[in-house]
Length: 158
Image (cartoon, rainbow, N blue to C red; front, top):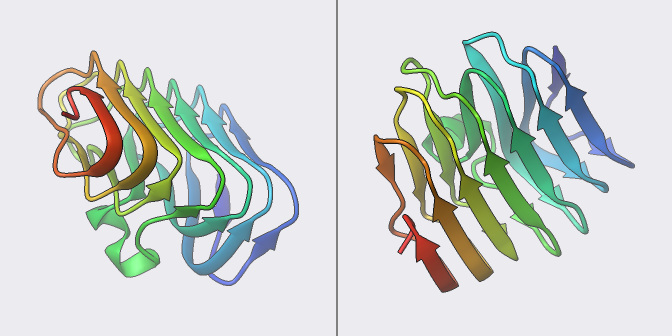
């Protein structure tokens, strides 16, 4: 379990390799590197990244099992969306449970990619401001990929 709460500054990367639960939430968090979470989860709330400012880093979440919040409604009480000043978000090959689902919302990023997320949980990508490309492909139903603002939208997020 990895838990970083409001007002924390991390000088480098945050890595959750095979972690059951990763929670980075609360207004005022700054991560000066990348956030990478992969190959973990316990079928419950696996990952929450809420209200984080990242000057030059990326967020990558892959092959997790459970609920995933990267900004959006699940983060409303915990700092809201994330501000990546020079970075991307990539969420791929996760198994999303029905209890928590997957929500990616209210983020400001260069690029956002959401690929091959499966499972019975609702999958929602909405309310993001993407300065370049927004790509959503091969995500199983139920999936909602609008509305978002982006220079270019592809696949399920058109």
